Image (cartoon, rainbow, N blue to C red; front, side, top):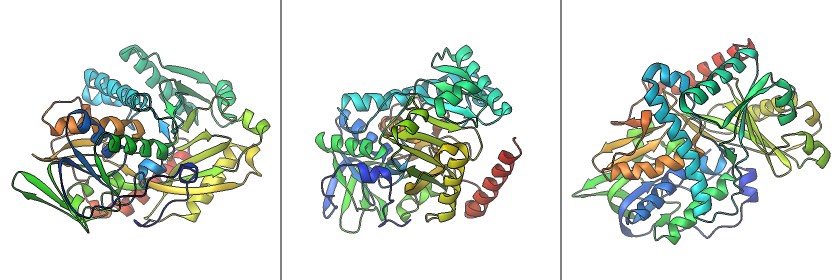
Length: 431
């Protein structure tokens, strides 16, 4: 999908009109210039304002055009790597820190919604249910929940059996699951736009359709050049996540993430009798297969998404596969029409963790949320500003002393296809 196209998402269709975008057409100054107008960049701008700094956000297309306006709107505490694995490889204290950071991220979204008076994002702390697709997956979920409870004192997790998960979801596909009450759902595009409105209200500047084409030092400032203007900033934050290859200005971080397309579909409005049997508690839900599917309600519709779409453009076959999986998991939706289809890029990293650090003494970066970034990007945007200002925020295993390029990055597309194919095979044989 190129930088002039917009996904036909349910979010875009249901979002209210926004002010006309302002394009950078002059030379301006900033205490901190932020490349990327998603959750990371907007939260960074808000943190900068709190610190008495003047931020300028430069967005290549529009606020929320990338992952921040296309994702499933699932707000959770989780990382893609388990806390048990973190404890095994990095020690118990590091696992405790990461557990705390995950919950801080969820709290960050709640504070934004409440503190900024965000009413149209539909945030609700309804919980998230991880649904086990086989007994081995259930055993892993239970072990992880017990680790969080016993080692970290986490009381937000409840183990459910097959009957309870069937009541929760309306599907008989699962053998059990684990419910986290410290999670929620949100209208992702409205959340992004509300953050942008708060930045503007606080005195920050946001320029859309203003891709950064070049970045170079000039004395004690860094100059970011766009097609029609420039920003001279004391500090810079690169916050472009899976869209770090739009221009050469973000080349130093481009090779640290592998863009992986994630696709979503939305059903037509469901009748009240059918809707009452599906996801009655209004949570978000995900399964444990490696090529994970997730689902959640959005009003009287069901959203269903997952990984496995390849390339830079939308894929008809990926949407067809999602619809097939949806109706296999929920046979009662056999005659239900799909009204919306869209996709976006997830930024995958080698260790399945985000990366936050300094590119040089004036330039920071924060990206690589591995498809679990609504909460974590909100928190990391704020902490990245603290890092740039010379503080020592707790970044856990996400802190980097510089960008960590992925080996053999030029092979990323065939590698993604190979890994995805291998994961699909493991899912089919129940491993």
